[in-house]
Amino acid sequence: MDYYTWRNLQDESQRDICCVALQDNGLTAVGIQTCSEYQANWMLDASTDWITSRVHVQVQGAGWQRSLELIRDSDGVWDQTVSLSGIQPAEMPEPGIAPGTDLSSALDVDLGKCPLTNVMPIRRLGLLSGDVPKTQLIMAWIDMPSLRVIASDQYYSSIDSRHVRYASGTRGVDVSLTVDANGVVTQYPDLALVF
Image 1 (tube, rainbow, N blue to C red):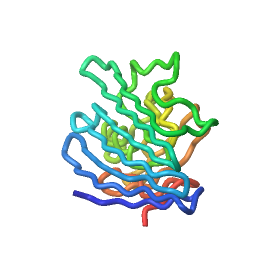
Image 2 (cartoon, rainbow, N blue to C red):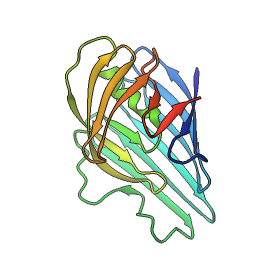
Image 3 (cartoon, rainbow, N blue to C red):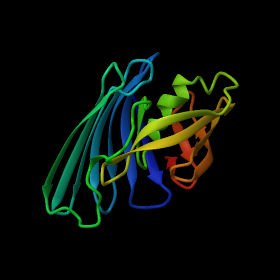
């Protein structure tokens, strides 16, 4: 088991803490994302070919809770289970897959504000051991704390054994990520830093 803690660079109150079981062909992980407005607990299974098969996220704020479970079957179909309780923040989008969202080509989830979920495409594409050109992927991106899911276009390419290029047109990101020997992000410019 490996343990990681990230400090959010945009919100000083936010910490992401996770315990990861890395295998040759995938990972399982559990974690917590906590800040002044909410706490989220999550579990992730990407234990086969670095492809997400299941993620479950529970978020709790002042007087409200919501949860989301996404399961990807062997045919690439995503199924969801959503629950809500308490008085939900009026400005917060409904949790779950946004209407009209096509996740048919998504192999992974990307948990908003949490650098761990970048490791699946980094390892699956072999970005640390080769000269991999810019590769487009679609992710099931989970907004935090709303748990709204959208299809996010993302691009990954090799730089060297400790850096990869990551971009997302959906969210206007284009950065060089610093990673450790496991491919886990240790520095995400303007977002998070391992400490």
